[in-house]
Length: 219
Image (tube, rainbow, N blue to C red; front, side, top):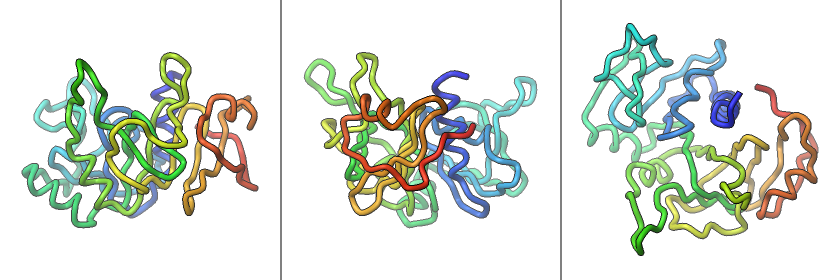
């Protein structure tokens, strides 16, 4: 199981029956493929659809029905497509219960940076709909790899990249751990099987406390 699948599988477990859930670009789009069978909800995608399901087979996919990453999805019975303007309006106005977003960095205060890197003196590619989601969604779940390619922590004391949303993240999921954020406090809730709290401390810049109910991640 690769890193992206580990994160997507664990993120899917955060979704609850009856929710309206948005899946952002990148790793989050895969969560719908691992949704527990007991959970029935309405999936939303920023590019303009409510009521989509898991990835279809190659022979049944429709290139006009896609998620935020332009990957084919299944439009379920009762599902609806709409303009981007209508979709963004729903995102801003509180119709989404939970959003799973990919991130470049998150920090112990619940800030998230997921839209920009600096190249040739310029920030790009652009903030997109994530800004609307962090403003209008009740719960934000951030998904990202725990460290960058050089082994530097992406779970920061303070984000260094331009922010997408401030103080909005409630849960952080990496391939190594699951954290909650409560009242500005980062709380380690789960660790990947075989890892210790010390292992997580060694790769995490942010300061955190350990939950009294700490357990291993299940996938």
